[in-house]
Length: 438
Ligand code: HOZ
Image (tube, rainbow, N blue to C red; front, side):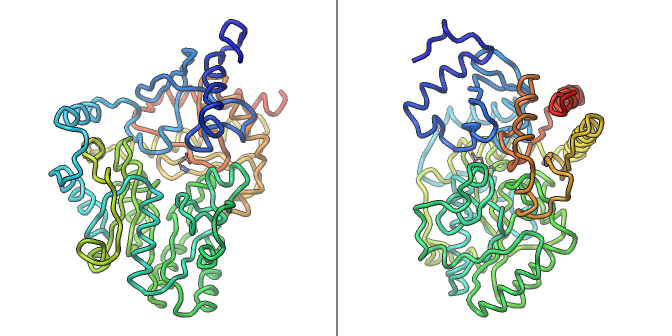
């Protein structure tokens, strides 16, 4: 095994820690995309984070656009979140019994998200989508679920079909180990193609329990819904008696306090939340119409449970985060930062002659390495992932870390001040120049 004395580069300690990690955990990580397999190098190993920045175990600082893959909308170690978590921890870190904090956060979510009348906390986005689908199936007494290629709703069996995020990054959009008896109930349509959804409804009359969609797709890069797409889904579900599920794990409280459903003016029947509502601690939720949610156990027969669900530390972090997001102007600041970043990336790419298409909604940002529009998974797959990898490495060497895949979204936080954005644009412009061979 390599020792620190023989490793010379500025990432020496990261290499060493990761080498040891690979002997202990599959791929050295606890979630596949973290292993940097798609960007041609080993990951940096993080020691600490503060504000918009993280520092690796070698002491190298980076402006961070991973932001925990979305929860850290206030940046790292926000004082308000830390104080709330510390206070909660001093009173007990887990009870498995009801707490007042659960009702406080539930109330904040119900007040913020128009379509949610009742909510159930779980621990991850995977659990939220899996549970929402179980509920939709129970309520409709139907089995089939329509999902969109390139959308990612966590790693439960029935949803791990043509999935984005790490599944696409690593070239296994449909995983082995998932029985075909399960996936036979998953119907696929291209994102932004309501006609394909209509055709599936026609083909499987009275068998479709739900349509599940990321209202802004954030797991094949960041792909925006075409005008009218979400409205059409609402209409199709109404016509066919199916449940419309918005997976707002990424977009909830991120693109607006009321989520993407507020932004686009479409009310789903069920909504899945995660990331921001836990302020960086493991927390997610599903919620929606009261007549549906009252079918969840113990009020109804649809079983779903969790030892750590509604954990007091996660509730405290979530409450503190949502309180901070209620301050006037927060979403304007995030929008300005996202827009400035995308503007700078585009200018840098044009100056270097590198073809890219950038997208953003508020603080969700993506830079596709292609000269063609990206409105669905097929188009996303045409991106030059080799160029993305070179750009990623160029940014890293210049002190900026973004998610290590073309098929992830960058997250801007309120801690990314204009200085951070300018520094990032400068680093990106240089990385584009290097990529273009100038
Ligand atoms: N899939 C989530 C973001 N696209 C979480 C990141 C992960 O897979 O580790």
